[in-house]
Amino acid sequence: MRTTTRTFRRPAHAAAAGEQPTPGGPATSSSLRRTVLMGAVGSVLVLLGSLGVGWLANVSALRRNPLIMWMRFETLGVVVSIALLALGSMLLVREWLRLGQKLSPWGPGSARWVLTAIAAWIVPMLVSVPLFSRDVYSYIGQGRVMASGLNPYESGVSSIDNFFQLGADQLWAESPPPYGPVFLWVEQVVVTVTHADPDASVLLFRALNVVAVIACMWVVPRLARLHGVNPRRALWLSVANPLFLTNFVVAAHNDAIMLALALLGTYAAAVQRNWRGGLVGTTLVTLSVAIKPITVVFLPFVGLLWAGRNASWRRKFVVWALTLAYSVLLLGIMGAVNGFGFGWVSAVSTPGSVYIWYAPMGLFGLFAQLVADSWGLDGSAWMHAVHSAGTAVAAGLTLTLMFVGRDSRIFRRLAWSMAAFVLLAPIIQAWYVVWLIPLFAITGIRNDWQADVLFFITGFFTVYAVADQLDVFPYLELNLIAARVISALLALSYGVYLWFLDPATRRIQRGPDAGLARPPVL
Image (cartoon, rainbow, N blue to C red; front, side, top):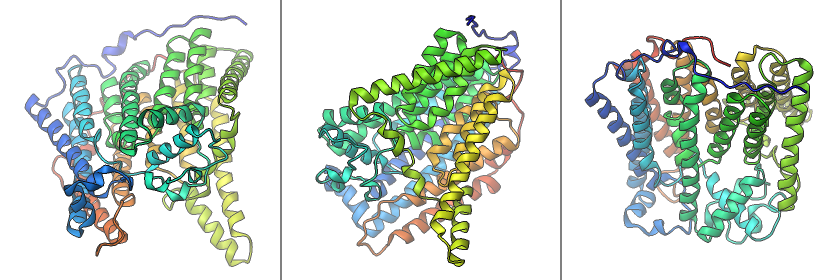
């Protein structure tokens, strides 16, 4: 098999590719500072709101703080917390939109403003109580299972004493973790270092995620340049996006580490399209799979990058086989080291047993169940069949995209493959959508209906998040349903204002298309 070395170089037309030598757009420095500052205010409001309705372990020492006690155990304090969270989250969305509006046409000087905004908005999030999800407490429980010498794929977090007091959700108490061996080791290390203290563990998981966010800040602009896309606009659309920051920093989802490794792996395979780049890329993507297995979808496209430009079908099949064999070998070695083998494969389907109303396949599955039950048939089986059909269609689309499409569109084909698995799943979480945003941003999101879709998705999931995941003390005059309604109405009202009434942000739906320019280098 002949091996060729292909290294990507910045194209001569890069200056035309949205990289105008203008000093960071028409906005003044004072105006940009105001936008960054107001976004930071929104982040601070989210921090304050998290003290009252964020997920806090029962044994946390923070529960004895007088201010937090008032915000969590007094009705007025909870209402104030809800208002702060809803308004702060939507203010963050507004200032993100305003930042993009002010920085257009995205000259070289805009890079420092995007980076400054990301840094300023992240800082308050570092010390907030977890919001929008309590998965980070399940990480602590799974780390304790590992530290106890048990197999987490056979023993849920409920097998460990006092698991509920450390914040884990009882819904998944007996479920195996859908994570690979690398993240199980990460969980074990965190629990060992912090002695399973929930607050310290949250901070350490969050610190690891911040490293992953920094890695994304590094790799996203470089991937965008390979595609002739303005790197600064791509960074704003993806990493500066409030969905990205809240899910990966505030909620501390391990998806941040998974995504960073996958993007780094595909970049390594893209900049050096030979055996060396292919091995490095496959190694990094395999480590990502060993965090969360969904990024196995990246592997065939890394194989296409490894095979090289205009590779023959024979070479593609050989490289695909090598990619798969090498990845399985690495995962097998990890399984042998921890003694759990490939036990994580059967656990991958754990979240698939539930559905959510706004996911198309979830809604279709529910309809199928209702129809089957009304006919005296097995409704659960019909729902499962619909969910399985969605997965099968996504797999079929991925297989098609492996074979169909130009070499220069490999990353876009990868983006649509990931999108198929997300959009055809019975449950679509906000952090699933965040997987997709960098892939589409680096391959080009036009400033027309495509940008509108991203803005709507960002607003929708922000509104949904602030109303869905609230930790409300059950013995208040204000019950959980009422709290969610208040939060949803506040956030939705702010969103409607941004979209239709705000004289600044309502204009952002259309504007000069500075994001796309020339054909990609790939």
